[in-house]
Image (cartoon, rainbow, N blue to C red; front, side, top):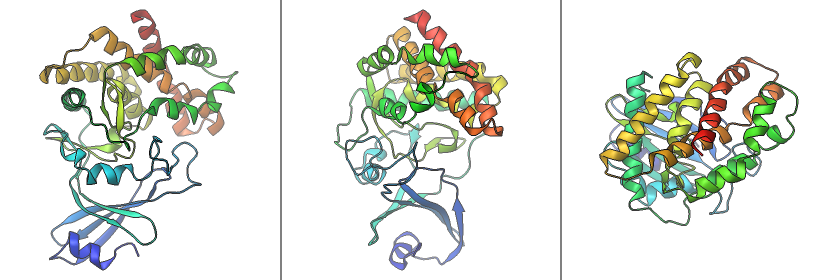
Length: 324
């Protein structure tokens, strides 16, 4: 039963359900489904979380607490109060109710965050500034719960390595392997960099609000280097069609300005060159699998857009090497 009466009573004590709208949730194995549930004058988002041992090859679920793909992390993040402590500039949706169901799933009833913002340069810069404020503040007082994700970038790359190792003859093959050959030095720098609380899936589909920045889907949240989330924002925005390829560099520069400004707002001192290296090098390394998977997909519409974005990734790597 998608809508158990006891949960409805807890979330909508004075209203009857008038509509249920299924929402796309991509492919993560730990997500059983997402719906917008409406009454006459209210609405909430229902997200069902579960452990699926089959699931997605690239977005699996795990029952190991230390895994970056631990399936119960998001309910624990809400239940612990950690997501209530992010600050006023960037926040998670309010959790209206959380229920463990008899079938082993966990129901998260979340605030309906409304609509995505317009993806202008100004709004992207403000989102990055909000992120910098949150991460600067959290870096000064790191959470340490055992269920927080650690080693996320390494785990992400392990699941995609076959699209890199086996990719020898195709667009950008030489550039892919030039970046991939530097993975251990890059990862070592990322591991040694100042750490903060990271979202690890910080891209436009998970960001809502015009006057505030509301971020959903905290399934991978944990500890990671400053700059990782900020570096992720623009490539994913282009890969998924939120921002045109032609705006890649301008949006990346806006995000960098905003992120630095947000850290400065919190008076968090950073080595700007070192941070710029992590912002660029980790981003380049993260997306080395893109050309290989475009060939595997057969150059469909999505894959072609991904490939058009890859020169941005190459430019990130080249600038990072100059900084190094």
